[in-house]
Image (cartoon, rainbow, N blue to C red; front, top):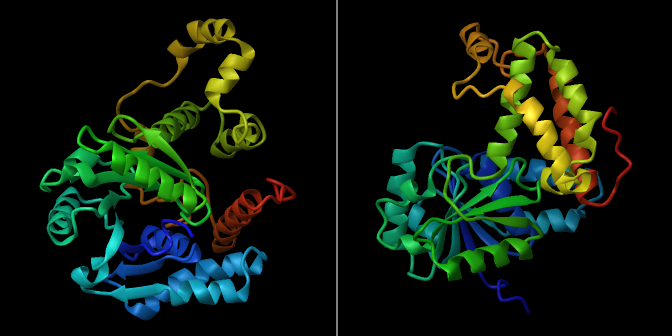
Length: 318
């Protein structure tokens, strides 16, 4: 019997990430309470069921497994009811520092001393989020990636106050869930993965802005090029593979030509000013119809489902 089998989990927030994280725990046998102040019980359950049905339709889950997962969810608008008897709490409310600080101040007062309090913030300082709490040693970052129920990575972000016991318990719990937790040793903006992702985005946008290539060409250069090897060959291993001497030689020539602005791209600001918000408006760096938007999201989910469940047949250009 797993040491986690009797643990109750509480999720604060019923948005995209909150429901996705709740689904992960419920699918692994945990009883989960979702604290929701905006969505009704029916709306929250429908969000989770929609995700589960995607997995059902791809033969990743059975009908019984879907029903069992839904039966383990409890939705409440009362915070104290949600966290009562919980051993692990994950905050998934909007990225507003004041809201998060206030919530953790309350959670620290109403939760038992042994309860781990985690935040799913993607970029905000965990240290700052924990500022108003007294027992800062039990507060930790657990940055799940969207869609949470499909992406294995979870960044476990420690602060100078987070105890080693809390770090190890959190890493162990996430591993039990089937996730791939990585330990982020310093609480810095963007943690690890978002720093890497947005460094790439900055250069990609700069290439378009400077007329070197259009947006689709930039995406194709990644999807059909080095992006194909990234799942099994990260940049550090790749540098060792080609040789640190060659890496130094390339960087000595190339780095001075790469985008290094600390400010957002003028092109990006221009798009926002024109109301070209991507999928939201039907136009951003590229033009999007309702059909191409739906197809993009469908391809992503199906690809992730196939990759994470061992089916390598899905072509990237389907």
